[in-house]
Image (cartoon, rainbow over all chains, first blue to last red; front, side, top):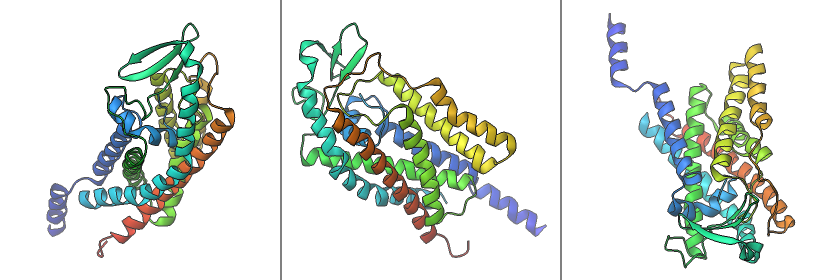
Length: 59
Length: 248
């Protein structure tokens, strides 16, 4: 009984590691999108040399 | 857990990104600036010029070629761009570090999903896979390009780049993680598919930039990219290991 109680409380208080990892992957991809791909001219100009050096399609 | 994940991702990105930015400063950035000098002399003067979205774009009418640029030296543009010199170096370095933070978070997430041990050694191996996904595979279709290079439509190239990275990542996963007969075959198909479809290229190749500079840049960018991913992988492993709770 104790085991069941403790494991269910663990599930309710902690984040599912897979969901966490997927969320972090999407966060990382979003960051790379902003620096490498976003069409905002300001972002493009700030990241210009970095985009070329890291082989993202630019211009 | 969330804090540990974010901390390791961000710190590993900084740890890898700072030396990567320094290496770029001495290797690829001088070639980009050299190419922009030639870009000024490009035959663009004789072609129609227009301003799109604040970026100067020279078109060679009727040939579907864009010789486009939006470097940091357009003081006449109303749109902000960093001034050449320390300001440009600063923003390039920040962009590189932010990109490596993104890469570090993605790499850590994938290693986590693969239930891999996360050490500097495994991080390095996964980092090589990251370089294959984001560097090698896209470069087979779209070699690292300088400002002023002839290129197809930007959106088409970005879509092909993204599709290639996703297909290559999924292919490597099926081959090395799922690792069954069917998945290895499917993985090889996924690795080949973007290249069978083919990257978008302009109708005609023309550039004001000497081919020696373009070739030097393509090779340098790939090497710097490989070093960057190796640093990201090793940093992720190192920091994850150092931040392991003692009871884990």
